[in-house]
Amino acid sequence: MPNEEAIIDSDRKVIATLTDRGDPLRVAREVKHWAYFSSRVGADMFVEWLANAGLDDISVAEDDAYDEDLVWRVTYTHEIRPTLEAVTAHTVPAAHEADRLAGRYDGWETSVEAE
Image 1 (cartoon, rainbow, N blue to C red):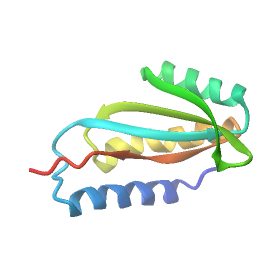
Image 2 (image 1 turned 30 degrees about the vertical axis):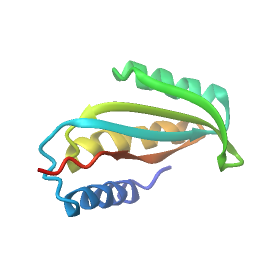
Image 3 (image 1 turned 60 degrees about the vertical axis):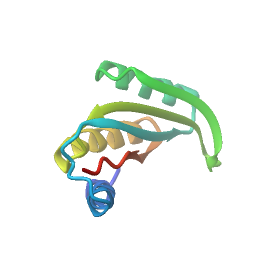
Image 4 (image 1 turned 180 degrees about the vertical axis):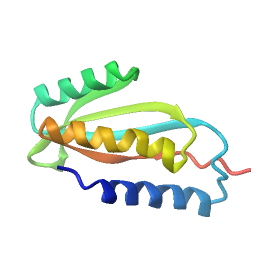
């Protein structure tokens, strides 16, 4: 089971980096996420979960660079304002779903939108 506090702490660190670089977090922008799976079936089920959540910019690829046991990479994007509340509303459920499917949610990134 994923450690929710660790996920939220990781989200806080990304947000702190954005604000340290002058981003007031007022602008919605594309946020890209990664998750890795041990099987194509798990990756495909995660894609289905994402699609049911309304996400549609999703890709699946074989990638053994992350972990030799987690070779299926799912990347996806959506547009949000990167506040802690908005981000964790997505990252925590995604981490739980990835874990349920023998995978691992691996975080997110976005652009700095400094004023």
